[in-house]
Image (tube, rainbow, N blue to C red):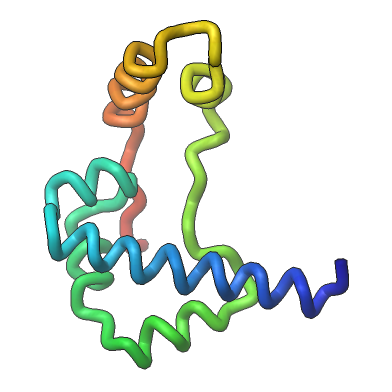
Amino acid sequence: MSLADTHNDIKEVNLAYLMLAQNMIRADRAGAVFRLGISDEIADILDRLTPGQILKMAASDMLICNFRFDDKLLLNLLANHERERGVGHFHAAILAAGKPVESVV
């Protein structure tokens, strides 16, 4: 995989994330803030982005979204196939709810 391929993949992920985040915020703001792990301030910014701004942000060579895989317990709860899916995901949601949200610095 070349650097150009990686950059294109990052752009695709960024675009998909920004579009999904904006749609989630517009459909269910409180749910989106929780599921995305963002602050109300970030939600306001994402909600106001124009299509051109989204395309410009997506073109970055840095991944915009932040995965919550830095918490080993959370990752194990989501990936554990031995537990009933609902129980593991319920516990993961409780852990994620206790994490600080992303904010504008």
